[in-house]
Image (cartoon, rainbow, N blue to C red):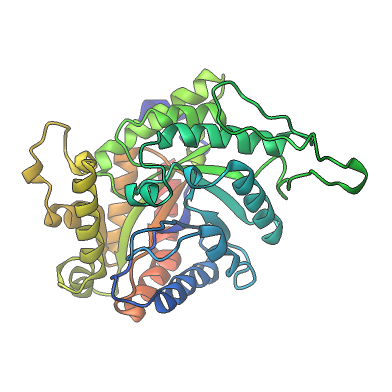
Length: 380
C-alpha cells in the first residue's frame, strides 16, 4: 500500500496477541469454560504473547463472560507480562463514571498491564435486557467515551456537562476536599491506558474518529481480508486530520488460526471434522451475522448474492490453517494483501482437544511468528 511505504521502512515486524469472545457450546458448564479461558491466557503469557483481549456479553448462553473486568481480575496474579485487555467493555451498558472508575482501578491492580478495549455493545438481546433496545447505542458509546476521558483528565468536582450528552458528572455539592471525598479514580498509566476499538464493518467511518482521537483499531477476524485495507486508509485519514502520520504498529488484525505438526491434523481439526471448534465457531458467527444482516463482511463485494456466503467458504477464507510452513505463508500473504500492521491477534476457540489447542498456540509463538518477522525484516 503506497500510504504505508515510508512507515514500513522503519517497521520490521509484528507482535502476537490473543483475542477471545469467548464462544463455547451452550451445553458446557461455565465453571469449566471459564477455567479453560483462563488457562489459555495463562499459556499465552508463558509463550510471550503481547496482550490478551476478552469480550463480554450478557444474554448469549454460548458466550460465558458477562464482565471482562471481573474475568481479567482473576488473571492479574496468574500472569506476569501479558497485557490484559477488555475486548470489549460495552460502554452503552453502564454509566461512564462506573466504567471510568472500574477501568482505572483495574489499571492499578495490574500495574499498567491494561488495555482499554471499547465498543457500543453489539447484542440486541443485551440491549433489550437493559431497557436500551430503542436507544441509539452508537450515540450512547460516543457520549460515554467523552465523559470517561473527561473524568480521567479533570480534577474534582469535574462539572462535566457536554452539549447534547445525557451523562452529567459532578461532585460539587458533596465534595469535601480535605478528606478527598468526591474524587474519582484516575488510571495508573499516564495520561491514560491505550484505547482499542474493534472494527467489523468494511470501510468503517468510525476508524477515522479513532485516528483523530489516538485510539487504536483492531480489525476483527470476521472480515474477509480484502476489506482490511479500507480500515488502514480510514485510520490514516483520521491521523492526517490531526496533522499526524499513522503508524502501522498501532493497527491490530485478528485472524482465526490453527497450527499443527502435520497437515492432515490441521485440516481435520481446523476445518473438516464435524466436531471441529473452528467449524462450530464459524457456524455460530455465520448465523449471528445473517440474523443481524451484517453478513456483508463475508462477501467479496457488497452486491454479491447471499447464497455465496457459506460455511465452507468461511472456513476456507477465514481460517489460517496448516503446518508451520503453511501458516507462515498464509500470514505473509495476509500482510501483503492488508498492508503492514503491528499485531497479529490469534482468536481463541473452544478447546475440543486441549492438547491440539495448546500445541497450536505453542507453534504460533515459537515457530510461526519468529519466521514471519524474519521474512518481514528481510523484505524491508
